[in-house]
Image: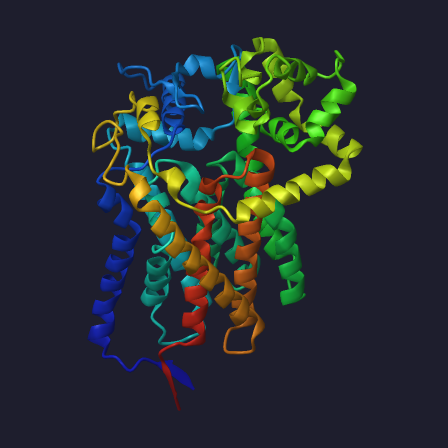
Length: 496
């Protein structure tokens, strides 16, 4: 028994490029509509960090120094971002290096090309592996149609975004594929999935934490799908984690050897705990105490009566005396607070385990409801913050045709919300109801959902809930719903 298509061979050959062209057009639709790349406050920060790294590696150029923006949109010199003798590890050095190279080449849109290639290859590899057993099944529609449907959501906004956010779902897709199909994949398919997931995990600090949360899921999936070589699936995920951890260690070694500096990560966890309450309560009970470096932050917070000073983003980024705290501390105290954040988290968790856990869960649930694309649309203050970034083919980063977002963002968010809700419902139904969907495809969808939740927990719990964090992965719902539907309703007939 075999599966064959009713369509002529010539028609099938022609349809492949057409499907691919439609998928590429869908992914690039927002870039075309806007007429320019989308960007964020931190786009200039990645370019500046990349330029610095290239200079240290010996590629020097006579170009103006790129300013690094503050969270409030004000441009600040790159040297002001990290305390002297330290290197800011909050941004990915790997992604920054790519940003710097493309900026030097005058083609910052190369970051968009990375997004397109990463998404297309990830979906193509997933479709290829899922459909391998179906002889006569054309892969092109199973790649293109899910991408086209996902492009009705947030996907094309993040394709056009000069930030590493598009690499989050790329990592989730490849980790999910390795977690479910690792034993059936060919060696080069495993190598490709590992390469894409590894690059993605190095592109943003949050990706390492997301992958850590996905590792137990891989262990469970490996055990449920069969005992034969069950260990291979979590081992593949662990290999990606090893790359992410190794990149962090290499960054610290390079910073020490080249710049004679320590790598410091901004105290996002500390700020989150203070805003949520358990961290603030801990400081009120234990400060002043010279043994607790974070008490310096508590003292800085006491200089104002504005309740907004306890907002996590204000704690980390603000320099206004009424709202700022961390950035107003002496350099050595900033370093102490940043270096203590993991210990601070553990101490707060030990003292208030229920309140701390509930705060993280609450933030995760809030994050799952936030997925508008509004934060991908540049504002005038973001344009000002990136005024020195001129290395794009389109010239200096500028507001595009989508900039006046108040006229369309509401209706678009409503339509996308309906799309995501319908996709989630369809995934649940196809997973639970008996049908033609193999167990592996159901498991694949569940692991992708686990990745979306892990993203919500990491971004909402450690940083703070924001629409950008939810929107960057939510398009995986219509993508997976479409793929599952196509698997269940293959337009091919069986012949003897």
